[in-house]
Length: 447
Image (tube, rainbow, N blue to C red; front, side):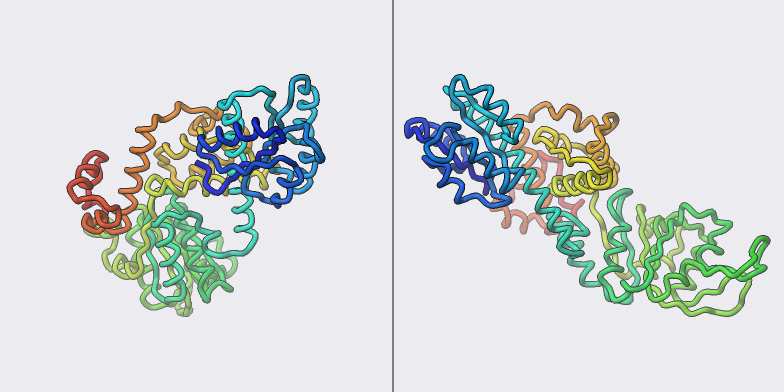
């Protein structure tokens, strides 16, 4: 349940200590029990992977003194105090000074487990945020730029590093919000071109009437209002990278001119017949299949084949749901720093809602939800996080969801090869086919 997290239990009464330890072990928790606070404190370090549960009245160091010492060591480490009858006022004061919660004796096993599970969930999320912060602070490794531990993201990162220094142009496919420009920037930043400009153009955002002037540049007098020379975006990207987003929206008349640049590697500013050589790596991104568009004569086939050298396919977020937790924590942390607010902790119920959402807007939508979460703004898809509660999934629903995601992940990893997936998962083929039919998974869709 909370692999790697420990519960340090401090209780000087051997009967209470053994009973509490047994209850926590039956709940599947890793417990270390001590009869004194001094012994428990020796195990504590900043970012200790666990929580502390301590009786208040102890021989030697008291539970309150242990609380103060823990908060000095790590202010975010949850400490739960166990109090006797009549100590409520003192316990409330302790919570105001940093205790996570308190339990009054005598307590039931269910009460003890419930409070500890909530504290462990808080600790788990805190440690994940700390880990992410260190990852971002430690450098610009590609793992810190393209977050995610799914097979798809590992493959994308590996391919980027493999081709970053190749001179060939790149075509990136992906739905809106999947991070095509981020991938393009990584291709630039991890190449020898990183010291030069990365210039991005959205082909659907520049009016056709001024596209040539913006992209190729112009000379004085080239058209009304052209008072001085303007260096175009391609020339500005010389020795660097030129990124064309939504290239499928580029008019056919402009595709011809772009093709000439890709083939000849020179541009001519409007109003000039002098060719200007350019050394650029061109990266194009599209939401639609350019081959299909070329067959429909909506995209030039010669330009498609010129771009179709190195191709990267970015999966939608719904196909890599295992990456949602780390992405969301990253966006929450970034938003908290940007808005100068405390980073709120997402509950397990809220995370279940995030994992179950279809994410039509992909990573961009997830980032928007994280911003709203930090700002406390409800409404729209942000209702996924409203109140922190969700209708709990049954055990069968959770198991089915995990099983489907695992089979889908392996089908994608092995390009729909059922024999290999069967071997990897240790399932007979007939059983695997039955499960694929149950979850509406078709092998051909992964090839």
